[in-house]
Length: 143
Image (cartoon, rainbow, N blue to C red):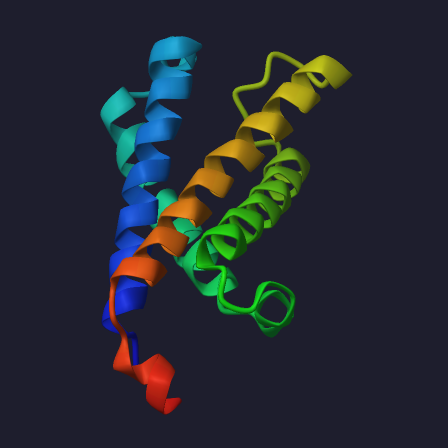
């Protein structure tokens, strides 16, 4: 069963990462102008993808490896788990070829991976903030 803390962190991180994505690609880089199909369709699919990304980032903070390393520091745990997820998502997007990148030059790849890691790290930080401020009795009783 999904806890209140998980649901809030999942939705909050998804929204924050989607906003960051929109600002970066839509306003700063103006990548949306290169779309070959309606922007609305792209944004609907992007929102669904960011719900999946938010789910993964919200689950990643609970991994036992991070639990052992960071003990009770939810903010750092969220930041690190988000950054690792961002790197993983970058690798998957690069292999599949889903990117706004202007090419596969090393500079473009470094910019893409940097942004992806920053974006998901901020999403992970949001998850960590929710873990600090939202009480979840399941974590106390081990349910």
